[in-house]
Amino acid sequence: MSDLESIQFDAEQDLKCQHFQLDQASKESALEQCIYLFVEGESEEFAFRILLEEGLGLNFSELGIVIVNYNGIGNLKHAIRIMNLTLSRSRPMIFTFDDDDKSLIRSLANLPDNMHLFKVPQTSVVTLPNGDIGGSFEESFEPSDFINACFETTLLKANPQVNKQNFITDFDKNKPYYTQIVKFLQQQGLQSFLPSKVEIAEHMATECVAEPQTYVELSELIKNIRQKTPVRVKI
Image 1 (cartoon, one colour):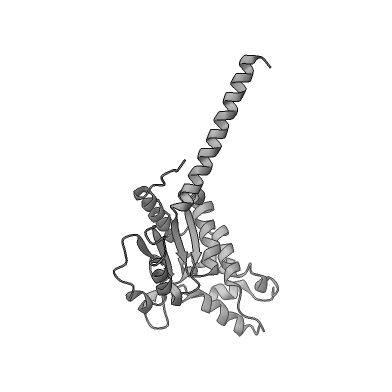
Image 2: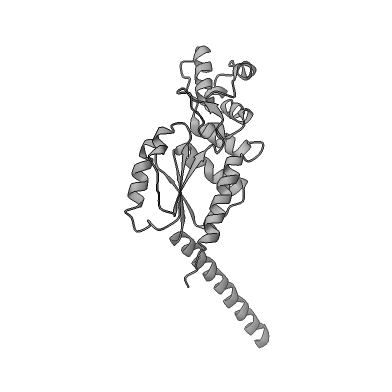
């Protein structure tokens, strides 16, 4: 290698090193300046990343998105209160919640501007037992996506005698989805009649015909927040 080639090689290596350092600095800065995305449960924690990152193309590392599971709607108020007491209290936060118990959400008024409530699904879908119109994670998908997912679970695959078409015939898209599959499996005489919600969530997230509008809107909210609060790279 000539002296000129050696100098050129060293310069290229230095440039690659600088790019790597900038990339690492950018990722570290994004994490330090993260957008917290709070989800209600394990199913959402698993599925939201698939829907938003793999399905809708959000880069969690570049945007600094951190998913946090607050383990049930009953903990939402406590999660908000605790986050208000932390050093991260000024960071953007999105609290997603199932739209199946409106009484628990009505009390969450006058939140700081950096805290955003986001209901799932965005558009009310089914009639709840108390007569309200709303829904939960499962209802943010098309009925066919939910039904297909149910029959891909370990429980249903272990019971091939359960007829999918019979469930499709009985299914009412205006009633909560998961309670219908549970009732149907009870009627089939299955000793175990609770298909895994996490398995259902995984299959819906990966195999849905199209990304549900709820997550398109969530994606847009995240991008808008990041546009207003851009990551400032610290070198």
